[in-house]
Figure 1 (cartoon, rainbow, N blue to C red):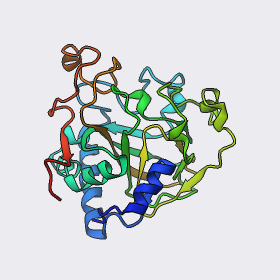
Figure 2: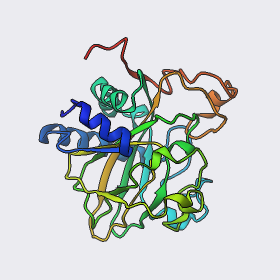
Figure 3: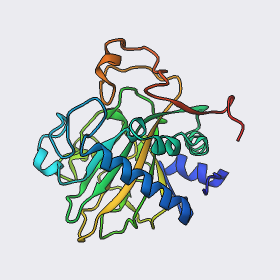
Figure 4: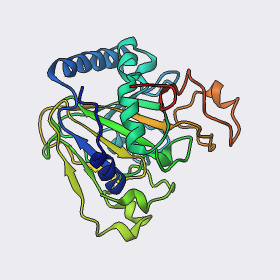
Length: 276
């Protein structure tokens, strides 16, 4: 695994809010990741996340047009909670250290992983933010996005608005039908030049949860597969948003409570506890 982060990469990430790392996974590790993720997806049989009956492509209460949104991507969350092999991959402290170094934080907890598959002819993913969906509010939240297939301009690679993380807030526009909907909230960014991030399989990107990003439509007859993991910096507190937190756990929380439940959001790296 290409898991060393240098000073120039940290500087680039901090300035632009994203970073692409080519050849993150060598061929043998890529095959392991593919096999683990595909097995976990198959075992879930379309169930979007553990403990909820919602199926991939069904209305989730976030997006107004469920028919359109269901054709943006297939999304299955927290595979680590239902598959031991995916759990081993997600608990890799080397990745946690990379995320902590880029974000500039001491400790990193898993918020949730995701399989994100754009099927053939899938709709584009409109410009959006990640952190405003989540149950904590931290300007340093970070995600990794790993290409399991080549992500190209034709099949739905990511795009970023560089530097947008320094101007956005926790206001949540959501992922809607119109690509430019985000600019109703952030009109000052409408002239920003976007940056495409095509990646060959095994490469990855990191991005800040407040970086505006989106993806092309899949204009091919093949599927573009990716796996992601969102990370919460350690010592965050509950902001009142349920998001992926299970109902029984939510009943124990009040706004301001520390989100330190290792069964739900495991600490995979901390600078003072890990020596990599």
